[in-house]
Amino acid sequence: MGGILGACNAISDYLHTLNMGSTLFRLILAMFLGCLIGIDRGMKKRVAGVKTHMIVCMGATLVMMTGDFIHVYSNGAGIGDTARLGAQVVSGIGFLGVGTIIVTGQRHVSGLTTAASLWTSACIGLAVGIGFYSGAIFTTLGLILVFKYAKYIEVYVEEHSNTYDVYMEFENEDKMSMAIKKLREEDILISNVVIIKKRSKTQSVVIQATMEAAKWKARHTVFREVRQQEGVISVEEI
Image 1: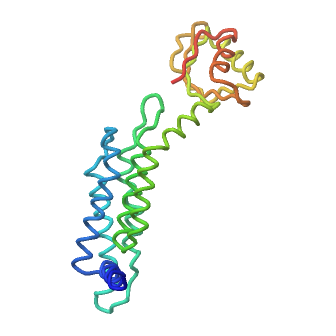
Image 2 (image 1 turned 90 degrees about the vertical axis):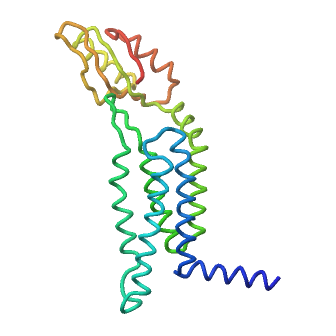
Image 3 (image 1 turned 135 degrees about the vertical axis):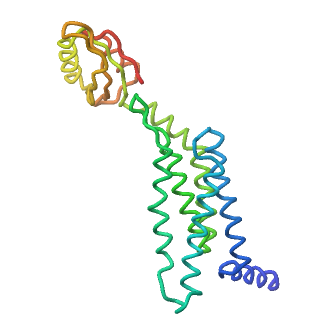
């Protein structure tokens, strides 16, 4: 038993020391962990899929190993900050994240999860690069669990949310002002109003807005109360 335990300790020491074998192991592990994260994004047809996550994770690993190499093997060994290069990765990965975020004409933002997964992939790569294998593996497993099961929590939150992005049509501008004031008295707030269509002051006006019930009410109850207001032609959730 002691022989097996000793061998495991020897392997662990070898992999935590920067050498040719541990370098190859860390890069392969980074590619594998990045691939696991990218699979979910790729299956959902996101702009950053398997290849992007693998490259980000592997690149971050290389950067962290380079910092460690400079610290250990450069002239004046032990001089230098191992984490300096890694810190640049954490901040610099933002340019990739920004490229995955899209804002549609309806002010709907998509790509935030993919941007966050890219940033986390870089952090996982840094952990692998410095030899913090358990942290990298557990974080990857945690991220996969988030991708797989957090959507059920999101559905629950959305179903119990009192805030809605809506399109609303009113008979005219005066009726719109009266309806918004009346709804506020009934604890339904209309904010972030953007006029989409208005021909004249006496004709119908269409707005895009955020509607929020101050007290929790079922979705159909909130929309029924809004449709019953004088001057409201229609209201639809975006």
